[in-house]
Length: 277
Image 1: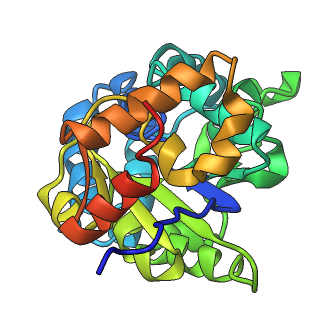
Image 2: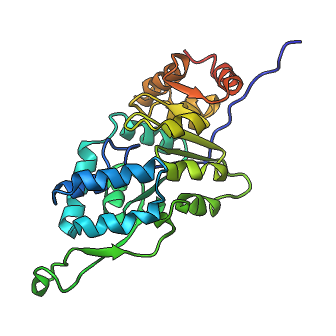
Image 3: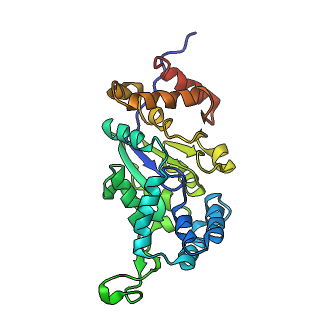
């Protein structure tokens, strides 16, 4: 008996991690470089992102090691911009054009992540990150210049399961949630979304590659487009620059640079997109 038509349904919300997913750097490590603490902070960050240590065990420790200033955190916005995954702006522009609600979901520092969000057309209310406190009496406080960071404000994103907690609040009838990320905090949130796409284009972490619903091994976000959109919704991209990016994303699934953990689901996905060259 021949199988009936296979459909791939659009998502309503796409949540993207920032460091190591939208950009090729870890922001906290870039700030640590200014203090000569890069090696220590990079080791702590990787331990948390690989799932060897809970995030809450290293977050405040890293901030205490580097104590960045607001000027340095604002400088991080430019570092993010210089290290964007090359096709990220076009991918996000296409998602916006197709009516997808795009959010940034990051344990990074809020001011820097929001700055990147504005560059990518994501409003502040759709940016979820960690707000910090500054020392008002250090530095040139008499000129109104705030001192260095003294700690982080209370946030679920300080914890290993913080993304899962926040995503639980977005669940609602009729919503389809997709998460794209590269670390253990993203993987823990997998039960809260309909699809978790692990991104390995910057940092390859075996635990993410093995457990994600979909794993993107290439250093492009193009595969996110056919995952997030249905073939019907993707017709809105015809005649735009994003149409070529959509085709690149599909090609990544066809040549193995992006794959579903479940081989049967992978084949069904390709069949649903079969008429797109």
